[in-house]
Length: 186
Length: 101
Image (tube, rainbow over all chains, first blue to last red; front, side, top):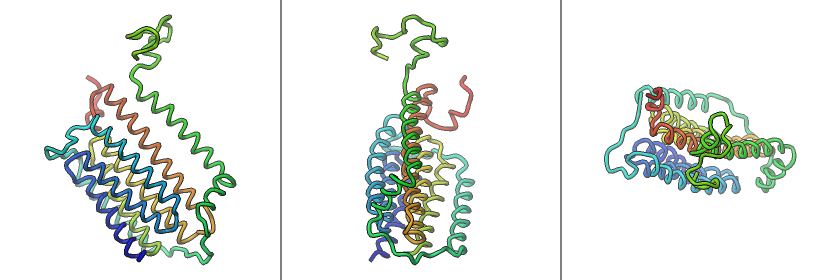
């Protein structure tokens, strides 16, 4: 049963991944990517990682919903009313991708992978939680710092009027140059 | 269902993502390719944990790391898209490569 479910998910994940770059509209590409992520999340569920599988699935749904909004904001042809090809060096990319797949697949079957005879933990989520709050605490701290830095960096990048627009290039303007006084209407 | 099957799936996802990241011109489509590649890491790390070292949590920690990397990539990518679009009014990499005229 698990075998069938795995192969359905595997074919679905790769098939939807290919569809991302073949469909005509940006919105459809986003939902194809969502389908690919959901199938891949299901394969994570199949190896008993309930928490991480659900985490991946929920995160991907939110990510793709946000991505659709960005698609409609910025991209041409979001509805797919016209055929759309926005590619460069397609043949070269295809050759590199096929070559990479061949090399990786050869490695998959040629390497003598280790197998484990130790019993699997009864609760993998408990194992992950105790690791992140114990021996792997440094990982969690670094991840938290990186996420915080991302918040600051994205706000700085996305803002339209930063302090240099408001106070001049030397930051020497006494009063900020705002369309509306009082710091509003930036 | 074996480690090889999972790694083959990961290799497939990685290659499709690599094709997308190399061939697409739209910045958001390139991000989609990168996300497919990170997704391959998630699948591979989960499989390694299950089939080789289920007694140690390291495989699961790698999955958490990859999920976070994907979230950061997505947030930073959209911020860069916004910045480039605001500065140059373009959404394609080839147009953003030219100097401003």
